[in-house]
Image (cartoon, rainbow over all chains, first blue to last red; front, side, top):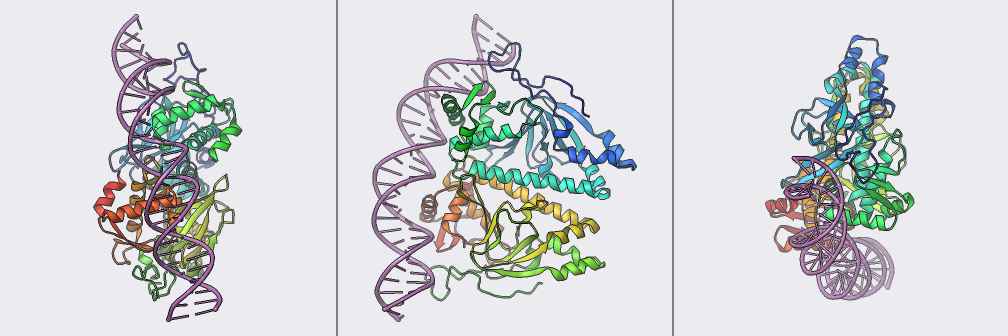
Amino acid sequence: MKDRQASEPFNEVHPSKSTRGAPHTLSEHVACEDCALDPVCKPIPMGTAEPFSYILDNMKRRDPIAAGQLLYNEGSDVSEVYAITSGCLKLSTQRPNGSYQVTGFRMPGELVGDEVLGLKTHRFRAEAVCDSAVCRISISDIEAISQHLPLFQQAVLSLMTNQCRQLHLQLSSYVAHANAESKVAAFLLNVSERRVSTEQTTSRVPLPMSRSDIANFLGLRPETLSRTLSKFQKQSLIEMQGKTVHLVNVAGLKSISEQ
Amino acid sequence: MKDRQASEPFNEVHPSKSTRGAPHTLSEHVACEDCALDPVCKPIPMGTAEPFSYILDNMKRRDPIAAGQLLYNEGSDVSEVYAITSGCLKLSTQRPNGSYQVTGFRMPGELVGDEVLGLKTHRFRAEAVCDSAVCRISISDIEAISQHLPLFQQAVLSLMTNQCRQLHLQLSSYVAHANAESKVAAFLLNVSERRVSTEQTTSRVPLPMSRSDIANFLGLRPETLSRTLSKFQKQSLIEMQGKTVHLVNVAGLKSISEQ
DNA sequence: CGGGGAATTGAATACGTTCAAAGGCCGTGG
DNA sequence: CCACGGCCTTTGAACGTATTCAATTCCCCG
């Protein structure tokens, strides 16, 4: 589970041809120690009883998902929780008027599907932004184990708490009063902070998703996002190389993100 | 616990003097059946063991909180979960730049403090908008019971799930692309829907909080909120009577809220 | 090499904000 | 009981920012 196997899930960039930007490193799987599911995975081997090892064996690890494919759809039955080991997933939902709303992105080491723990059907759609891979844990297995291992149950609750904290952060960062510049700056910093330590430097931020999706998520128009990024570049706050952004002046971005 | 005792927690309006608006009904306590804590309260009497009845006895019920008082503050230790039985509470947080951000309002029958289940310190400040009352349940008691009653633990998880759903709803309603009118319309409808059945009609929506707080929550200026409400009134979508709003044309509001 | 979609840039418009002023409500004090 | 003062709310007009619509450029891929 700790081994690292190289693949090339990043379909937007062809390293051989790309004239802009270094090859991305999202292709590397995140180490289990850096994964949000680790506290859930870890207790399993500790149990000596039958069901635990059974689940350990049954867990699908680093299951590849091609770019554009759905991990689950709005309204579909909830059966698993996922941990991203490589790539990037996009969460979105349909609004009452039919318009499409990106509610978040998930990076390697983060969870997907935990937003509906306890629910029967999915509230969102999860789509692979680029070629990705996930570990799958069946929810019925989780529930079965929870009844035997209190540690496990605590881990699950803690996952939910994290979810809520993330959402609250999102609300206060991107919603109120925030202008385009502070939203974009906050987004860049947030993605940078969420990158796990296995990736080289935090200043190098890959953005595999489309500009439209980022803009949609931030409640901006693609044009506004583009203009803002260009402005940041002119001010030497960032350096754009295609789908990768280098954070040049983190302090400057931080002060902008705080208005 | 099912009895209803009248009080007068609504300090903004003096029924004897008020020239605008009928007397508010938030003073009525919500019935236990309509309370979000009910699934947590209910299992308790079912247990025959000692600890359960102990907690039932120890729970502080309908504890009054004067307008302006804090239920808890940012950074303070987490020790209880609360259910509002009357009045209204405001959740807020300090942003990095020091500015103040309202993250939500909680109405009778809803929970407060559940956003930090599993955490040690509060992430928000909870302040009574008007004279209010809450039921208090100690978290250590909850944890103690959870270990014995799986039903209980399930109820707690379901509370967290609800939290997340509310937050997601908030994000998609108030954040992205939404203009002032759709935000305000969505807010009015949301508050109306959240009013429990004990209150007469859902079209009569009391807004005990200040306009500034509503505007802050929606990411608008108080002036913009005021203008929007005035416009709605001119269009006969609503009727304002001080701190109470009557929803005249719900369908119209709904279509505006959906852009 | 050429087609197509995404991303960027430009100019005009629309919307929310800002600053300023007036009005209304409420508590206080005469 | 009425008058005063403060605060919240509402209204008005000028401004700034994000959006819109349109055109161009850049990449990716056949």
